[in-house]
Image 1 (cartoon, rainbow, N blue to C red):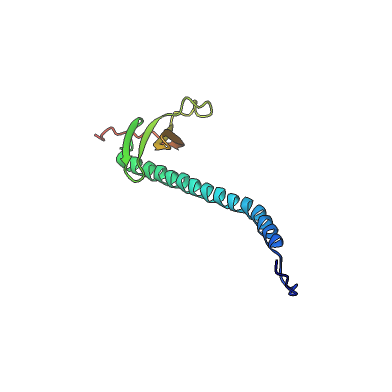
Image 2 (spheres, one colour):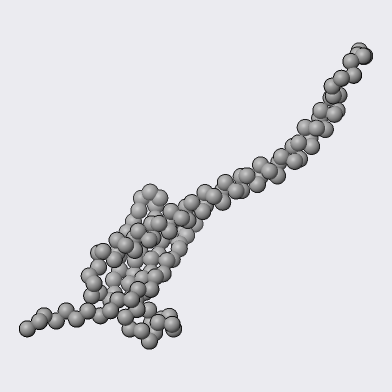
Length: 138
């Protein structure tokens, strides 16, 4: 074995221990960063679906006549593959609105497939739509 009088620097064992300690400290940090990026991507997808739904509500409102009390509309998007369904109907199922005849419920259901599982979200709005008399004036 060759002996050196140079005592500056680290031995091989000290270097291995330093790398092992760094690995133990940095591994949880990398795992946390991966989980954070995954959560950000999932939240971005949820926000995109919410924008799809609110945009679809506006399109459905423009497509219906002001006097309608019941209305249904369906739309399929290709990128990302989703199905949107709009339903306008009575809000009598909600006890807070059952005594108010001019309040209607707008319900948008969005359905998509993720990881081979069918997923869906629902957006519910309540709209005051007074009855309009369309009788022609004599």
